[in-house]
Image (cartoon, rainbow over all chains, first blue to last red; front, side, top):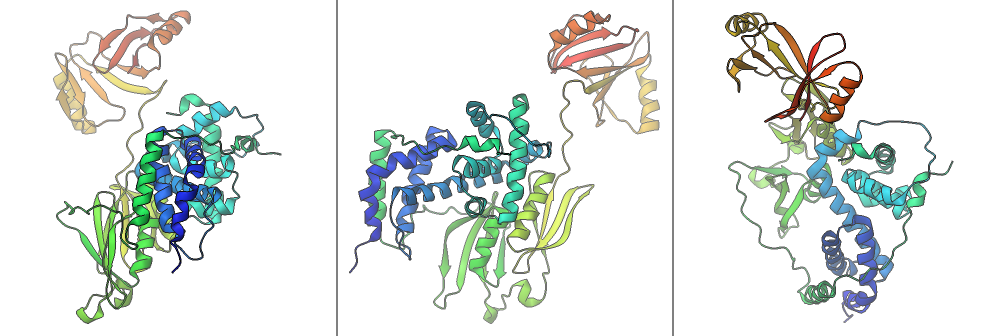
Length: 168
Length: 292
């Protein structure tokens, strides 16, 4: 009988934990939430590790699981707060090229204040540097819908970045 | 041109969590690994509190569960009950504060999905938080495989659209009409009608515009019900007229500007709805400024 492949999780736990936690903390910037999502990630990994084909249980694979948990979290938030965010984000549309040097401190504040669906799209695309197709996969949307979402998210980001007063 | 947002790229920096958390998670992980496989970790599912719920027959329950999750943000509630023949005999989802139950078709007892029957005989009414959410929900539903039957449009009772899901169930997605946006700096926030005889004025405007009135906070003061912007009336005025109240972000700064530009600025008064001051512009027109 083959051993339970999920048992490998205990072997990588100590090494992987700070990476998974660090990833989630830097993206959601909330200690409690980062801990909750870290726990969700490892517990979900138990089931995922037993699937066929068997994944290689590495820190990188766990970050992928964490990314899914983060996207799921933002999707829940978006559903719950959908109304508010839409009002905010439909206000601004522009096709002007935008050529500035982004202040990352301000950028993080802006991200915190954006609607969850915009924040999710921008985080996966820019902080994680994923290609659009992978962003789409994490968000459970088509590539086409994700491209459109990214356009709207960038507009909302730019509007909030240029007018921080407007973000509440 | 490079994308300025590319500079946000953030490599992963390991951060040790609280050691107590790390130890507790390790023991949870150990318990999860030892739990019998196939058992779920979910807690007891509470009984729904709603009086009337719906229980749908669908032609592919597993796909339907996925569809409702993607389209309407449903969340699974407990584990589906799988019958010996592989059909799902019972499954539950929550949508907002409602529970949606569903099962595969059981033709032997006449439970067929609308798709198999040839059409729905009822609609499911899904209420969303505000008008734009109708459009987003319709988009998600269509993307998840629904057919758009009636595009979103505004009606007196709110914004509304109809989609038909893959099992043939007809969903009306509705929201109440948009709330009036809150006034911002520079907006007309309120109108005060100063009249000599409030009884005559109420009779006149009631007959001409259909206004109704409720007694206000001050003697012979009246609120006009339901107008936009909100308005009030007071009787006994020596000089009848209509005085606008404009909203400002900073009353002190606005009063200074009135003064600097040749107007007359009164003293701010604290009222239950904010701080307000009477002003006269440089040509003699009266108005008030309000910082809510």
